[in-house]
Image (cartoon, rainbow, N blue to C red):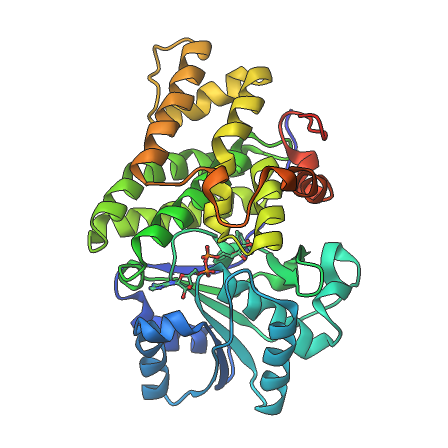
Length: 375
Ligand code: NAD
């Protein structure tokens, strides 16, 4: 008999217009009245922050804006955000943005309450307790960070991506409004969407998977594979945006109680070294890793082929896997995902460093097929 555990305590409000309900949800969840809104300059420019902050002002909340988040967020910026939270006496944190804003918000809440640097807490090194409550308003359909208990922060001095993981980091509230994602530029739509698919595939296939994660992952894969090309072609297609945001949420619920695996470990190594956008870094490693994994683990990848709609129920496992690999290749081409070799700064000489960093990532052990430097 299988034994497993599943945990997600985040309250979720999903739907077009959900952002208008943020003030009442904050109140019902017991958040204080002084909020630190954590975001990045792109979100201000796109008019998204205004859409979140206006209803808060109307309901009498005091808002302090911290808008210095950068993609692949940095330890030093988290320290600055924590100082701002303390100096303005904020009692709660609201993240508005993609994974970078959400992970920064989690880390800011941690450092403001418990001090130290992100490094001190990485990989579960230093224990801690309750934080200021965190609400997330995701504006990309990609990371699922709005429901996970992790934050990925880059160590500025070494370019190493560190993972902070603890139940205290899990947001209390997630407000998902698909209308906020219609302004995401096309390339970012494609890359973040592939990140969500990788969460679903790795959460479903990895060694730490379990039945609830697999149920979420199964549904996420079908949604994402169908909706992403539509959202990429027509950014204003609200049905496709809605399916993508739902797919990304479900993928977060999938890997959040399982793990990610080799694609993510390689992507984080690349992102740390060259600041490659996270979704793009995942997208370039997806096919090579799937080819490697599927050679040894045919049945689970035949499942993925059917769940993504790349193969049908009648296909035998070997045929299904073949269809998955060719189907995904065409899907990535439709999304105009570039090859690893054409990414700026990356050269063949870097492969050893990337592999070394990826192997040092704990999630490598979760990959369905064992990996070493020769894989
Ligand atoms: P991001 O947050 O870095 O955002 C990318 C860009 O998109 C930014 O320039 C931003 O301004 C812009 N943008 C976002 N929403 C927009 C909108 N609605 N309109 C216009 N522009 C918009 O990208 P991301 O892929 O969402 O997050 C990546 C980060 O998340 C990485 O650091 C990654 O390691 C981390 N991550 C965390 C988890 C987790 O569970 N904590 C999971 C996966 C990834």
